[in-house]
Image (cartoon, rainbow, N blue to C red; front, side, top):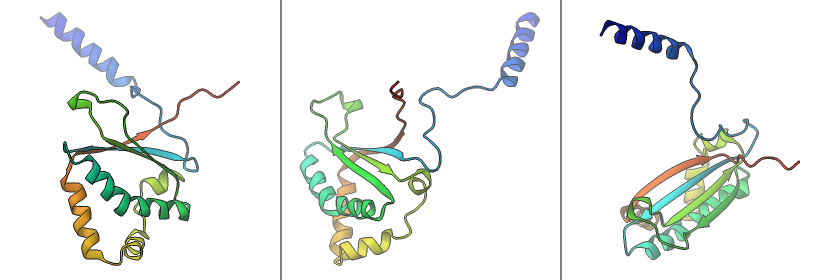
Length: 152
C-alpha cells in the first residue's frame, strides 16, 4: 500500500511540474485579426418561424448596423437542412465575424443609441425581444478558430 501511495505521489509531482496543453482548437489569431463566434439558438418546438421572424425584425437590423460601423465584418444566418437528435438539435446558427477579439469581447458603447435609433417604439421592441427569448429552449455562443492549413 505504501508503494502504491508513493508511486501516486511521485506521479502527481511529475504531472504538477509538467505544463499541460489544452485540448481542442488553438486560440484565435492576434488582437488585430478577425474573431469569429457562432451563436446557436434552439427554439421550443413549433415556434421556429416566430423566432426567426422576431430575430429578423428586431436583431438582424442591429447586426447589420454594427457591420456598417466596422465593428463586425460579417454576419451569416443558417438553419440545418436535416434534423438531429433532440440533445444535439439547434434551429439557427448565426456566425459573426468581428473586426478583432477586443471588439468581440467588449461591450458595444453605441448599442443603446443604435437600438433607440432603429426602434423608436421601445415598448414594442422590448415586448418582442422578451417574446423572442421566451420561446428559446437553449442558446449558446461558440468562438471558433479556422485551422485550415495554408495553401502551399
